[in-house]
Length: 171
Image (cartoon, rainbow, N blue to C red; front, side, top):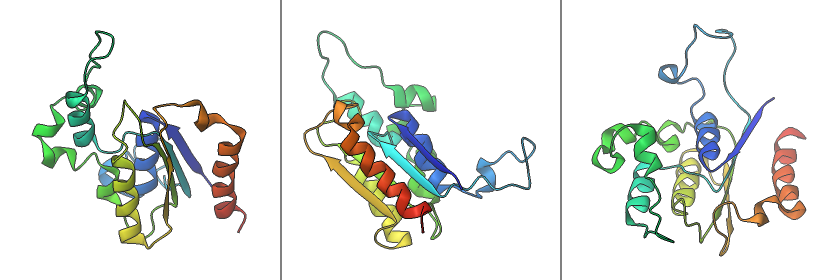
């Protein structure tokens, strides 16, 4: 039994793991244990990057603050201007791999996130629930919270994360 979680870019990889189990094109069966599935039983993403095209445009549209313009890390990661290659970027979106048996997923996002577009969080949750049924993915919006806000690390929020996992693993 495995759960995966991450924040920011790590949330992207957690979501991808949660949705892409057994996708042959994303597996390298020559490494590790080819007879063992990479499937996880739960995924958690906090203030995550989920849609690289949306991220690319969000960064492009974001103003410089304090004389500093944030680099477009989505474009750097993909090696292309994401918003100019929607067909390629579709392959990077965790929602492209959702099947009816993808992992239960908890997504938390700050509605005032200045680094990643909050809108990518409900987009992914809606896709998972459309394929798997309501409740397979849960969105918890942290109203007015920014990227990496300290509220993500409070004991109260950690209780929410553990309650999600308990609901899966203590059945």
